Image (cartoon, rainbow, N blue to C red; front, side, top):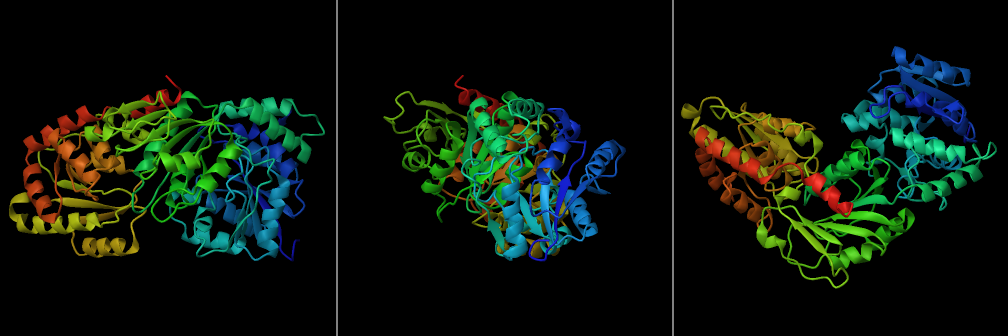
Length: 580
């Protein structure tokens, strides 16, 4: 007992991994992976009891049997709802503090684990982790959470990522919970990957274990040596410096995730790290299976140069992709040290960019002009919508959209953030339009998307509007937005990434730009190429609706949109990153 609190380590493990089935019992240096995890947890001085939380499925019987033989208590519950499984395991063990352990982290640092447990048990924190400090490599993150906070997360968390990863509900609410940032030791805070998610990860860990002596396998000195070996053996990391903000939405982040997913396919051995502002973006990146290092941004959206350079010094030489709206050459140079290969993704042009290559994935040709940068005399420019990276879930739906004879389903989606409340403008115009044309239009349904970064006032206004009109349906931050696009006859978008996704799928659209200087120019180009109609206010939107409803008009937009975006943008950027 520490400070009168019972500390319980809950190890979550199962055989049904999607990327590496059976990894929990994979052999490493003569022992199953799970056994190494349990032996490392037993090195911790604060842990009173170890509980294995696995599923009730038959394929996990051997997992439970091994853990029992090694002296662990066993809890078996739901496979997919990991938060429920961890909570029930902690409840059964009468835990006061829960140390969460993933069974794919064979290099867990027991001293950092003890520090996290101490912060919660003795210092009054609800949650403690070394991932806040920005230096913990995948496979070495420690977490401790009070049972009270865990119970609240169990009762309140709704999002899939919150239930899959157990702690996001608490760790992303510093205004509600008292969260501690435990420093990662400098020797551990390196740019290496030490977890096991893929077959390549497993072979890499096996190679490291083979180079450690029997004495080093469970010692701190052995862990230090493992980190040093990993640094020498792993290729340079891939780093995405990007943003997800209410003012700008999440489009920049989502296209970086698309490129990262492509790079994971072509070079699975390379570590991929996201540097971005704390907030909604972290959950999206972690859900996609990538590591996050949070850095501060100022009020207008510029990253903190000092924090960025500190993180880059830990990661080492990398291939860096920058995708931030306000990241010009001066800011980028201050954030990214020399020795890195830099690819600058930019939408607006007309300025000097810091990078060996510039990718401008827009439809606006006047934005393809950049000032020369003497530091990069051979700087290359790749411009056009053919470089627009699309998410895998969008690419899977190629050819799935079918034009309906009658337009009866309208989707309003203005991105993850909507600072200017254009979603409300669109809904008010639609409500008025449907009322005036009710006799001739027949039944029309309107699906309204509330983005993750919408402010409270906008969310409330949309809720009231939709509650008072049966034709309107409200959807919060849907994970199946591409499917919603395919199920719609007309989409009302903002000129950002979703507009390009709609074009690729062939969905007719009306673009209502959120910002005059940026999205309106993209909207004009979509209209000039026949792929969309453009409205700048509610009245113009009503006019555009009348023009877009006929089948011939929608067919023209559908065909034209598919010609603009071919879906190979992520592959092209991946080739640029590789210098090909």
